[in-house]
Image (tube, rainbow, N blue to C red):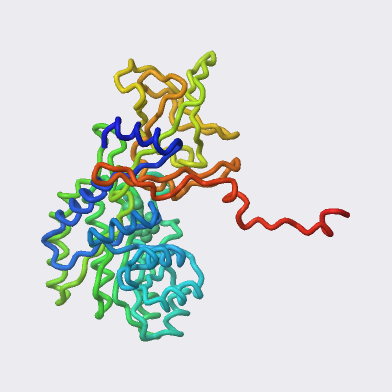
Length: 406
Ligand SMILES: *Cc1c(COP(=O)(O)O)cnc(C)c1O
């Protein structure tokens, strides 16, 4: 997408605004499937928690993607978007037995990530095909909050508990059809990923009835120029070869599953916000925008670096700015960042705003959530309207007067 298109969309739909480029989602999807084209049975389950607008789900469905859902509500959204139950995978963490049973009743493949629920579920429903989430305890980089493979992580069943796990499966006689791992975000080192894969293969040898192996995600995408990213092509080459060899050994053509979120949608997203005020203090020049961490929390939440451009002045001389939000709380998007000279009223564009941006937004400070636009075939389509005052009041129930007037 070009800056002039983004600027035009900000004028047309107002700010703040999320814009997603369909072409980029498509090219990322095709890039991933191409990298693993040597694998006979490949399945991509889009991790919809990254960006769950129904139009995005439908776009990915058209491309051939399936879904990875982490709550029953995500499952329901997926069904609403036209996915069939067998195209949806449920990989929750710490949810109740009841929720797992409800999702199973919808016809969706379930994944269990702790021994307690596994034992309860297996005892009650021994014939239901179940996938189990293993924690291989491999650190795949990224930061503390998004690394889920470490020893203290709440995710998955520790690979060290495999003997206990096998005993539960034997005692309940349950049907384990898949093994899953998700080492967390930001894989920088392919060798580390391949090492984790070996742990998964080892675990897989304990189960005779497998249909698939799910390698999760955690592919790193570039956030700025010259940033390192997961070399998908290299990973594809190496893991495909290793996976195919494992299938030969196992004696069955298994399905290889990935569940990328960021990889598919991060770079496709742009967040556009208007500069309300340029404020010079003794030490800093602030650019205050008509947004805050209520709309894009990643920089404050885990220090994510979102590249920022002034698309109203693309050729402007670069100066240093701290870009901050308008909510009443420290709310910094970027500190002393080089950005083309900013005037009040300019539109700033945040890159990598496709994944975990809108989906983590809130109404903090009683602000409305932004609108979302899908840019497809050279045209912008509104796929979610800006909120209105009614949205803030929705579900609020006034107390009866008998209670308020004492
Ligand atoms: C969040 C999540 C993903 C997606 O991770 P990305 O880093 O966005 O690719 C995949 N699988 C599971 C189980 C997840 O919770």
